[in-house]
Length: 415
Ligand SMILES: *Cc1c(COP(=O)(O)O)cnc(C)c1O
Image (cartoon, rainbow, N blue to C red):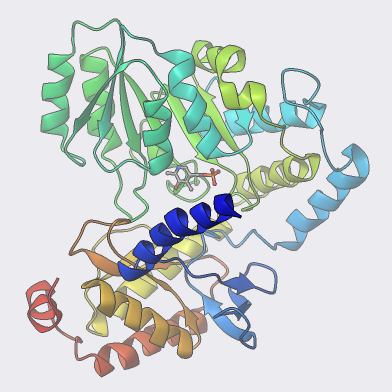
């Protein structure tokens, strides 16, 4: 009794604090497959409602694609349900090898190693490759999973200002005495949807004899003319030392991740990366479906082309409707609202209009940079996008922010 009272008191208080700061994450339930149209139970216990989904990472609309589901079924039949083993004991099937080879070809690298997730790939890769005599130089806005991986590694850690290649160059000069240097960045940054300038970054890395690691989770499958990723977009395929990416977003959206790149670096991960050595292997169901995904998107760029069209169309329409959108070209479109409560209130009203979007605010984005992040998908049809824009127009009008720029919105609502 005494023990559980203590638990309630100490940790219950922390939860209350999270709530009082407006940071409590509510439960939401999708009661249908993940798709453009979904049924959602929100808040918990409410009747389910049908909404258009504009907040999933289902960029290519493959999460519920019939071909992918069929491949998953075939994988289940031919290779069973689970591996009940980590990779280095008896958790590798022929289809794991096949998927690794396909990913290597698709990403244009030398070798690939599957992990249970990209979070795990990032957790394992730094410690496996680098040591005390090395340095990691990371963009200041890298994904949380890269930050965690970096924390687990004994190499020195330094940062450069977000996408600031001048600053990066200074840091590379500063660390010229280290055994090895590794520049670390996201390919596409998930909150702003901006692209790391990989052409300039790779040139700098080559000039200063540094490796570069790119986490392309928000790019693999759809950025670049044939969807290979940010390195294709910037014309630097074959010049990235390590790509980490996820199968849990555009590439079918189930789970799984990988480290792909230079042979020696991937081999070191195979020997030493702890999530590879000590966490269970990907299910054959996921592996078989992922193979089909790579086949589908290697054969035709139809889905990434449709996503590109949808993105352009949405960006045009939403800007014309008078909302303040961060310019860019990726399907991550932040509708800037600056004020956290405004972002939250508008997202709730959008939901009532049948559009599922989420407000993001501190600490997920910098204080005073609250926004609703819209994510486009190849699963969206033109009329879905029209509905979304119309809802933004209606809700934006209610809050009197249409046509206002940053200063106008901040003047009205504060940061
Ligand atoms: C989503 C994401 C991850 C995590 O991927 P999982 O496979 O879901 O663990 C890692 N890095 C970045 C940049 C991401 O956006």
